[in-house]
Length: 196
Image 1 (cartoon, rainbow, N blue to C red):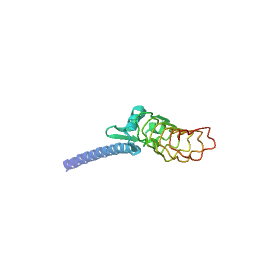
Image 2: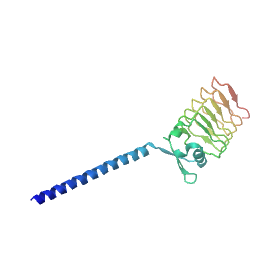
Image 3: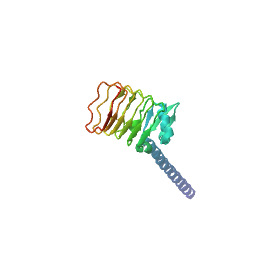
Image 4: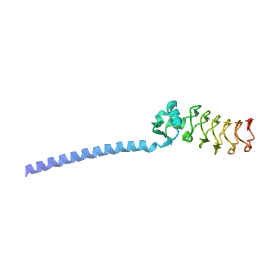
């Protein structure tokens, strides 16, 4: 009887220790999975369809926010601190056709995208103050941010513009195909719309 009690006690202790070890390992596994899911749950990726724009972002300080390459395509993490804090993008003369993804730069105040092959401008961040998109093939601009102060869209294929922001004070639209312009803001200091 004593041997039976000792064996049962030993088996019970071993079972309890094994169960406690499994329970501890399960708790550790749960914590690790939780951390991994939290990390992935916060990242939100969008496609950057233009390989030249993706390449430009990659070599100009946003490589930690991107996945992919010019061959398979680019994905940008819209929650990346660099994307959220970038204030200037100067992507001039690099063969960009599409700026999709630019809207996720929530603090962007300056965008120079001159001398590319753009045919349209996508939705822009609401914080843009300076926009220069000269020497492209742009035929469509659907909207302009209210924050815009300087807008230069010379040497494009534009026929129509959306309403101009009330705060706009510098506007150049030389060498387009305009026959008329939208209402001009009352605070406009500079206007050049020659050769239309």
